[in-house]
Image 1: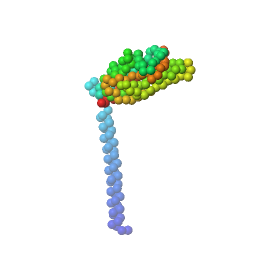
Image 2: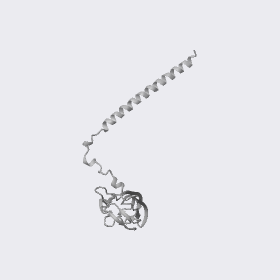
Image 3: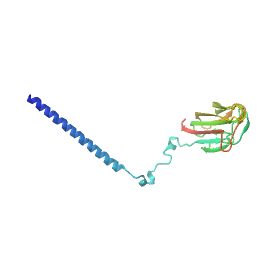
Length: 202
């Protein structure tokens, strides 16, 4: 056998075993360090002082530009004859954060310019078709329609919009045709109008 080649093989094997042992030892040390780190960082939250507890809203007020705006209202009575172009006055207010909704007029005006979500539902009485539009500053955004096929066939029409609203500009629901609306029947509250600030921006 060629001795120089044999010696080179022995050196290569020894080197490989040294590298393997070094890798195993290094992995073992990493595990020890990780265990120590976890052990040191474990803290009972009940031991935290009041000064370390974050705000209840988790900073959402800052994210929304400091404004919390939302409203929800419903129609409490029947409209036996809704005239074309008439504002639907959702007279019972469930929520009005930011005081933007006016129950007397049915109009929403915000004090914060931004992107808003609006949703509404209309309930139709008897078999007369009723149509309404979501209006912003005198312009139609979208509409909803409800039409029954018989005297006691009750149906609802709904729609949703996400739009940019400028401070002080009005948003409302307007009749696009003559018809009759069903309001509150017990706890039904079938005809509703709601909206909220998604995020503030110019």
